[in-house]
Length: 541
Image (cartoon, rainbow, N blue to C red):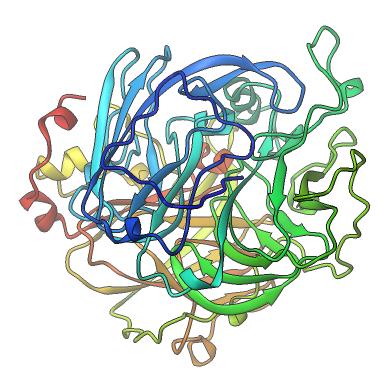
């Protein structure tokens, strides 16, 4: 949780190894401060990536940390600021940082994707990401190297807007990060997953889930010899009766979709991944990997304790485990309550549909938008099947992506390469055009697809047994976002404008599927890319 009152964003913010991150992320914020009007500053953050032994849920394991802590520090900017992330890699392996949802307009080399936009940051070396933030909303940052982020290289990134239409409608802010959690390291899990012996291609099942990096674990399930403490502390959130809270919810998982709720407190959705929406009241919020929402909650219940619930949708997982508690909890406590017991609150009764997004027909843009007509239609078929080595991989239009870490695509563009090998899954868009992605999921599992460098309009989503019909797509007032869930054996039609020159990944954000090749790249306006001046330090990586 991140509480904010009086947004004290100074021109240079530096995090050091001495900074520790409590579960509540205390931070002052007020919608009535003049600091929000101070734009075009440089916000500088020092990030040191290393390994530590920690126990987020009571089970001790070696994991990745940022500045010696988990979760990573909150990064805050105002719309119009320049953000500088000075990253030092203290690992033995290469790493990177991707600012998820940032457009990187004019700076595509800072998107942080090895094999596509950069080479990895070498061990014991530094690299600085510096880019203009001309957008606002709820974002996050994470490693895009191998599967490192699922072991701790993750944190919230918030871009404030002085012209946010809801500023007067809430008093404080809270940030909630949801994630699944594994007790084995990602290399071990990937070795087992990407193995011919895994004949069905079943993804690793999480051991637990976390809210803001905390939960408890039943240590009777831990392997013999493990260091484990049951009843580890849960995340604690403080409410003041009568106050209104904007809660920014981010799913940073590897595999799991969650349903988020707070007992007896309705929520009004006001933001979807940077797009402000008209208020829509809900009780329970389905949120898939990499998705973000802002909701407003009024603390108008009896002073006491209430459960915050993040319910892992296990029906979406490949295999079930009787050693996984899918109900992840945190505590919401009203100021003035002095009972030490657990909450006695009751969960909302209704059960939303499993393994789908919040109904996009109920999410309407705050401001009217003009949806442009389509120029190009790109059909994408998603499949999984064994490769020539018997390893089950993900395929886009019958091609599985193979990462070229030594010669990333953006370097090739600058070197006037115009043809790419089939395993790079490159789609070139020469001009500023309107593109429809018609995505057909032939797999029996869901896929939360994310587009780098852009947002898209969700024109339609369909379940198994249906097919897209342009006569019935929503081209009047669709929601705009950067991550959408494509139902199992279903489809989605997404429209975006290719007005941002760069190399932009489009991939399923289930991390196991990224590693198994369910990735493609848009090379957008390559001639315009070559007109940009790439920094020397990037070329030298």
